Image 1 (cartoon, rainbow, N blue to C red):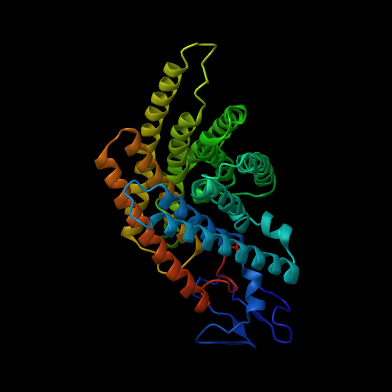
Image 2 (tube, rainbow, N blue to C red):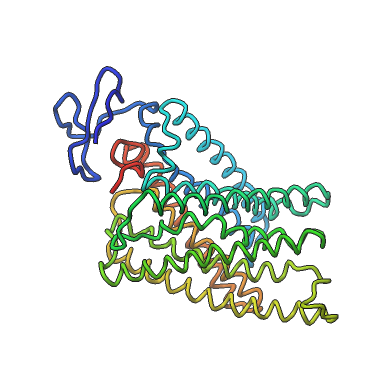
Length: 401
């Protein structure tokens, strides 16, 4: 793969069929270490996958906000993480804008067979920020605050529904993937619309009655859409594993993506059942208390059912990664954080619903693991940038496999 004129006066090219460890050739001679490129040059390879950083950090802030066993100052720590994530998001957005202003290629990046699949991570980051607004600033009694969250919710639904439609339409008509190479990243275009239900579960309880029912209805509808698309993809994924075996060790962290859909669906169902107003009734029933209780029991049963599926995917992915740990950092490592955040919050939510101290304790233990994993991946992310292991020709998601 060549990049003519990328270095201005000097040019380089990657050798054919280069591996992840290959280094560019400069002036016809192979160097023992990567050629030092300027930030402006490396910016060409700043991909949509960088939003996995902000969606994972935003998920971490939500995880801290949902902790069952709290201590003094925990809320402030979570708020700090949330604000840091806002700054990270602004930095990533600025870098993406700079990439397209300097080098162009916005449409090409979205339609790329590999990088384009990570475009939805932008919307997943937005979802965590909307949920964080409610979690950390939801005590605001102003009606304008609730209205703002409602407006953000509907805007998010419209945008992510469009992403699910148009991105899959493009993939079905213009890109060819082999089922033997199926990876969970194929689910990503449906992931943002699925999180509409998660947002609804977070904001519905404080919404006035006139808006909470429409919010929950839309959340339930789109959560179901996203999960059904994911579930259909699971059949191809399981078939691929049975026929072709586990993915390459460098791609195995991406297997944790499958943990997310059932976990976030379980979380959303329980949260939306709780978020319905007390005046809600089923088919004109006058016993609103009994109706609400029935809906909550059904949501808990469905949530436990889906949580078990999420646990199964978690164990399969964990064993696969432990058997052959990846050696080279990829932004897909963040899949070991964000989906597991949803799984952990779902565990905590079930523990609170069943009033089980043991389950909540498991949720707290999982939280420590997720926080530790975030630190581990973040350190490796920073080191990868410094060492030119990412943001470098041939080493990012803008290269087809």
